[in-house]
Amino acid sequence: MTGEPFALEILYWSPNKNETEEDIFKQVQMMYETIHSYKAKEIYGKPEQKVEEVLIFDEQRSVDLMEEKES
Image (cartoon, rainbow, N blue to C red; front, side, top):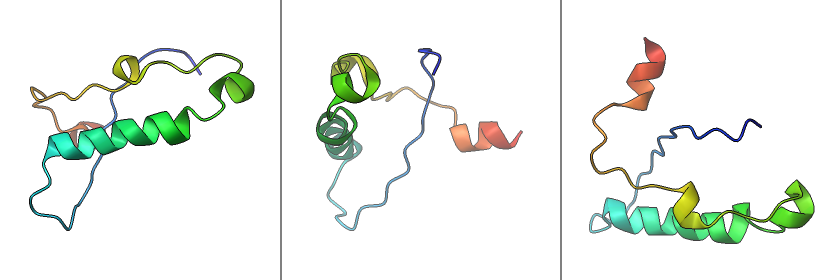
């Protein structure tokens, strides 16, 4: 664990055709707050980071991380 930020591309398929990427991002934020951050202080020895510090919805991203890894 280096503490350095890294990019993660989350691939998600929704059966709900009306669900937007923003809707999905809100669900990911909720999962971070309820699952990943659960007992962060007790398990990791430090308090959880705020969701705004951890997750960023990058609408301007033009690089496909999966293609970048294959090269």
